[in-house]
Length: 132
Image 1 (cartoon, helix red, strand yellow):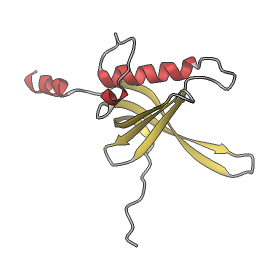
Image 2 (tube, helix red, strand yellow):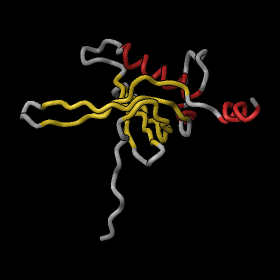
Image 3 (cartoon, helix red, strand yellow):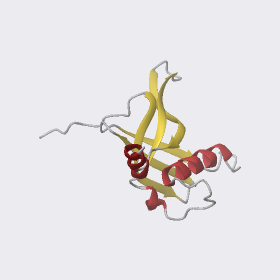
């Protein structure tokens, strides 16, 4: 059987350009999964639960998703989004961090997290740099 390169995780680092490759909303569980790819082919997923285990709104998850959307679409006036596919292909800047967590069985696992979302430069930004 022929093997592929396998999966490559996002590497840790500050201010990385990430492209949104897929957005999946699970209405039953009120859960959003935003898939990202970095410039080196690494991938990662931001999973957001909009309702906590006690059925209360998860404001932190909604704030994170709102920031991703507004950064990706370069529109901080947005109040609503229905077309999640509009995010596919958009880019954001984010810090990628790795956190080591000791599990109950003593095993240490590394989890990758995305933080500090910002707008990625647009083609127009690059055009302006050449003019100035």
